[in-house]
Image 1: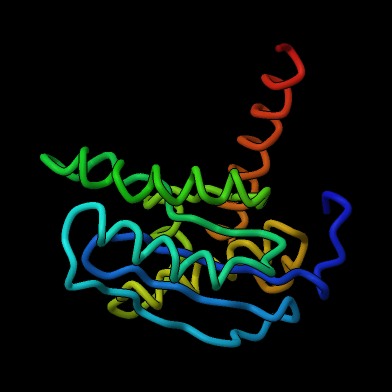
Image 2 (image 1 turned 90 degrees about the vertical axis):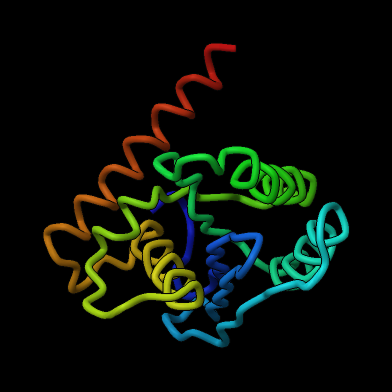
Length: 164
């Protein structure tokens, strides 16, 4: 459980995209407080700044931010994927936020039986974060596999940091 009291965690799930970023905020008691879609008509750095600032306002009180990791399988979009993702990662690092990266495959494996959109994906990320922090009641076998993989990945990163 990593020393967290699950009922006190404020989680924010982010499905980042230059065209439509989904955000979901959880009060730490399993209830979604809000979901929202951020889009911008701006281009270039102005768009990155606008999205970053809206997300900054939503994560300021978060204990854990769950961010969908880069979709490496998307062809010809590496620069776009990295652009916003890098901006958000730097911002979250500078804010001292704990970040849990969830792969696209892990997100899909969670097993939502409906057509998803950015807000839905962000909400699923919040529930993955809750389970990661210890609220594992009622998980399916596939969902437990996702949580186990995230914990294994976390332990590997901690060991790598200790070696430095």
